[in-house]
Image (cartoon, rainbow, N blue to C red; front, side, top):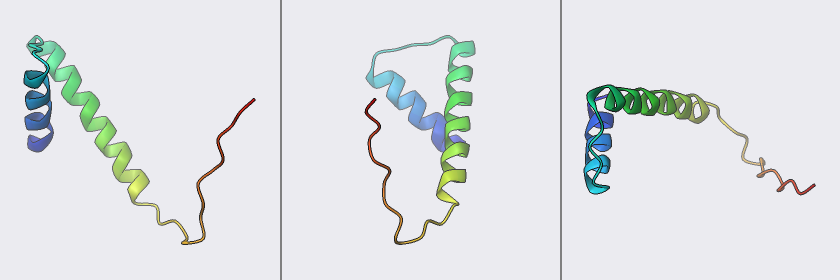
Amino acid sequence: MKDIAAYVDATLAMQGLNPTAERRAEILRTFELLTEMARRVDAVALPTQSEPAPVYRP
């Protein structure tokens, strides 16, 4: 989580944004949730024959 906070702080600074402490906490929580979701997806081993799904076009 320390790395996430450093990343968020650096990204906000590069964009010239200065959120309130409350908003920063919300941003950090969102990144923590996204990180957990990504870990779960990465944990699933896909067979080597798997192919990406085609693009849906109605």
